[in-house]
Picture 1 (cartoon, rainbow, N blue to C red):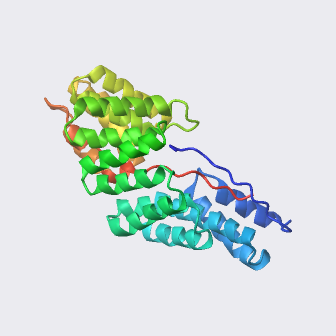
Picture 2 (cartoon, rainbow, N blue to C red):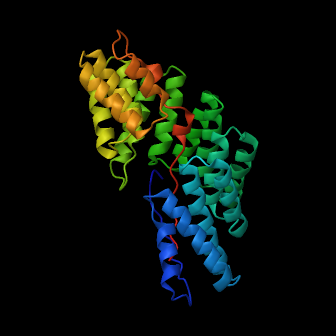
Picture 3 (cartoon, rainbow, N blue to C red):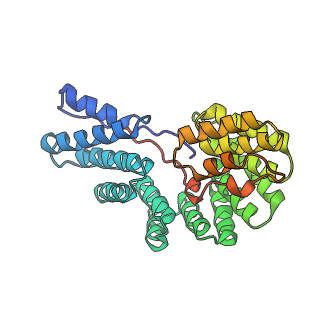
Length: 306
């Protein structure tokens, strides 16, 4: 699914007011989470007074809650995100995406039982949907049960053999199990599949680069970090990774420049401060580069109110 966008065309009936249309537009856009929160909140406030309680109105409200929840999660306001995902599910209980996104966030927060309930709900709605297996795998991964995570991702691959995120997460799990060649194969596949995506995910290149660097393939690794930064020039983890490689090559000024950019992008990024404080070393500092488990979450499809 990686960063794909699904637009659900839901007509806003008998609402000619420009303010309402503007709220829907703000709620739909994906660039600014704070603008999304304002727009979705305005849409929910206005729609509750105008559209009544029809089934279509309920689904429109569910989309607004989901969009606002995702914006809250982008800002790290996870309790508010879960509350909004829950509202969306109450209004549209058979929407797999809503269960999937709430389950992912619960898994990230260590609430495995609640997460598993959402992933089991997906299986009950559609036993063939691969997101149940991917969700179970994420919960297992975050619990550091990498072997069972690989098994769940094998099932996800059988159901959807062209999902880049499946290979990405399995590659990370294989790496943690010490299966470096299997990890390399999966991370390679994640990058290959992501190339056709309209919105490419720089994490796939980052982790392929990190694995390559750990195997002393420094030139290839630096290329991967550079490609990740073409997708997102402010990607702090890629800046830190490239900076460490530059430092290893003796290019200290260039390395520090990357660390400075990483800190400017993410002022609370501890790895960037640590790397900038120790720019010279004999060993590639892989342990300082790997983002925490929050980096494993799969991006949701965008929901659009129309």
